[in-house]
Amino acid sequence: MTAGYRPWSVVVRWPSSSLPSLKGYRRIRDRAHAMSAPGVGQAPYVLAHLLGYLDDRRANPASPSVLANRSGQYLHLMGHSFGGRFLCEAVQRAAERPPRPPVLGWSTPRDPRQPFTVDSMLIFQMAAPRDAFTRHFPTLFPCEENPGAPLRGPLVLTHSRWDRATGFWHLRAEGATGIGHSGVGAAPVPQFTTRLLPTEAVYPQQALDHRIVNVDAGWLYRGGRHTRLAPAGAHSDFQRAESAHLLLTLAERSR
Image 1 (tube, rainbow, N blue to C red):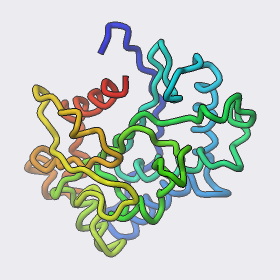
Image 2 (image 1 turned 45 degrees about the horizontal axis):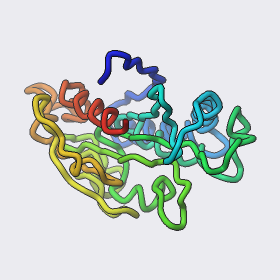
Image 3 (image 1 turned 120 degrees about the vertical axis):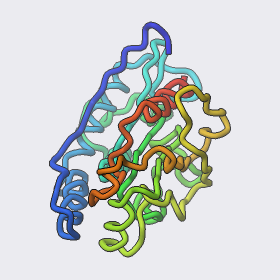
Image 4 (image 1 turned 90 degrees about the horizontal axis):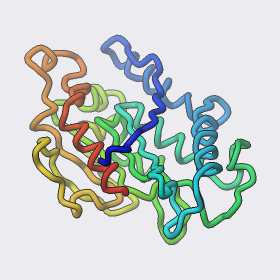
């Protein structure tokens, strides 16, 4: 990172704790979904408002047209657990055309060749079915039929077999283990699998330059002696320097 690196962070938080039960699991799942659900949630409008502001104020970039300019303006998204599901729903809905949310640069775009894009998305221990990107979020990714998709950079997702929330509880609530436990299964785009690296190691470019990157963090996201016995296991054991190393690597590779 350069000396002038000054990130602006927008953090979304909502009540996400519950009793360790199927009822509690489903309550948190439904809360996350409600923030983006059509006719209920306002998250896509808030996100579109932010993206419209950035698009309105950015310099006119050369090719490719992304939310980046000579001043280093990039958009990176990060979520955890059900927050990853919320992000995917919000981004997918915010990018729908038509209709567009009536905010700032979205309602009257200056140039249709400059759609908003997400430069990278990192989701720790996503609480969603392994085929979620085929069933629920297929329009996130650019393809011949959908060239204006919102996600231009990689979607990177960590998983750990020690994650009991997306393993034991997800299995009982949704009939199969989740992404945070076992990684992405079926997907509309090619995938790549790699390992979470220690902070002193450098990620090879070819390890992250893919549409979907599954990162096996089981060697580190294991939980301590006490959390291994907790209902969620190592579900929240991502608050580590190695996680920040992955996030900053994605930001650096987008430049």
